[in-house]
Length: 451
Image 1 (tube, rainbow, N blue to C red):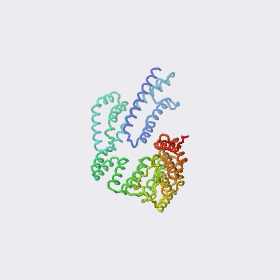
Image 2: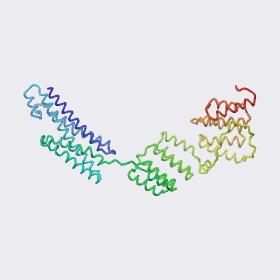
Image 3: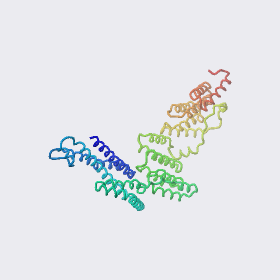
Image 4: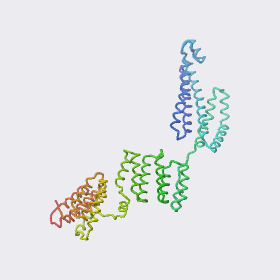
């Protein structure tokens, strides 16, 4: 009995090794695009072609009834003799399992090789033919000896021995890996101003990599910034976004880039807004959609407003030092123009109350051009109440209010309270250093000690 168990375990592991090697070699030949479907097929074929026949073989050799005796004579004879017949049963099942495994392995490898060869090109088939002849010459003698000694029962082992090395070496021949797209030649053409040649190089790479996001975006950028052909660039971006392989982040990057081109090259905020709205529609509820909506809210309402923003000079934050001691500018101010500017800014804020740049500009107009310091300070207080504003912005706005309190309202007490709040809440900011210096000057001027 021990001998029978030992033989059964040994042959079982031999069968398992044959199946495992066949699985590994077969999966190597599976196309990457069909890997999931191929795995499901191989699992189903293993169950139907090996496990079910092995189970049926085990059942047939038990002897279900007097009318259905064990299939193998030695098992039937052992049962008729009486006594222990389990050793003969284990021998028969182990032998059947290993033979079925060998035939299953040979059939599986042969079928997979034929399928891979059918989808290969002419050069790959020629290389495969060379590989087959080489393996046949190298393994012909061992294979022949196995067939001569074992006969038909050893045909599965002979086939597996011959087809295994072929399957192991065929992946690089039948499914050669594509090199990743290389755009170095196109970039070199761009640097030398040879844009038509650069376009040809990009298209050449895209012929082999039709779903390469980087290549399509490079082509769109070429159309927009070098050929001044924004419609073709827009169509290219929209085609990228329509591809199922394009990820959500890639879609957002492409459409933000398209919005940049509309703003920078065409000065068309409406077109930029349409591009960003695609992100909001396609990725509704996502962080990318939220970021796109924030950018939409910051877009100017018209091309004229965009040009005004682009041409406007930066307004520096008021210094908290010596400039506060200067008298207010007595130069004449066109109050009608200032009022019109204020009304335009109010209209922008009605459309988007979170437009921080417009609100700060309105505050400056009210204080510095319309002598309405209290209204301007109220606008800055609204800015300070906004969430998600940076510390640099908040400290700058506090310094701005302090400067206005001192310079325009001549209220040293309130100005001093704003400076102290600035140094308390943002002690490490640049504005806080200037605020401390200003507080020291106020102390010396008033002859009092700071509380």
